[in-house]
Length: 299
Image (cartoon, rainbow, N blue to C red):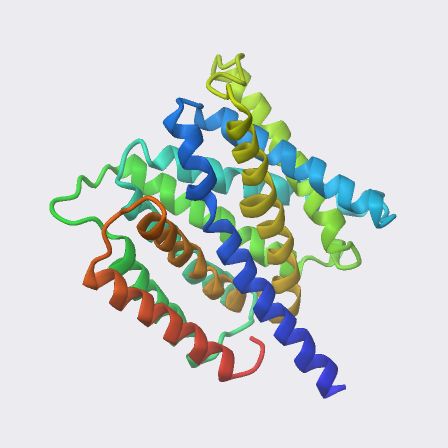
């Protein structure tokens, strides 16, 4: 019995790391699209649409059920809205504050997750709180821009709203009894579908009827499909697996692999400079995660 529990936690930690790394691949596939003037709302719509299609094909091949119980529908729709809004708020915040500051603020979501769990009378251990504080410090060193920073209040609120939406998603997946029996695949499929519908509405409401503007070559379509598979479908699926096995708080801490991966891609693929602060920040993050993994039980 203990072996099964240990194996489940091990899978949860691995899935949490996979979710973070996969989500950190966003710049790898999004950069060529944005450089070719593909709009953010269009990119988000296609990314969720392709992710949903790929998830549906995977479920069909493995002969999994698409059926939702009536009691599950509302919760799944709420999860889709939360995850989609997390993406939308983050991208909108880039218009008002530097992306590094936005990334740092979004990484408040482990703090929000832990506070929500406390409100639900589940108290993370001091080791988990220490890991949260250390990883947040590491992310500040990794992502904070140099020099004077314009602190636009709307941008700050959007980034914080992205973090809160993501934290609520994690907690609901972890704690909701209505979806306890729902498989991770089915949950992910409908969450992605909800997101695709939301971004389709957002595009047309904003007057963007030409969804394929700027997507004018096979390599750009390939980037768009990859954006749907890795940072979206794989990340969301791994997130559900991890949250159900090690809890929302620990899964949120493992999300630190997202900025680590993004920084790695920026440095080694796009030639962005690597500073000593970034090296120190990355080291702090990795040490904090290792400390959390090797110490303490599920919280």
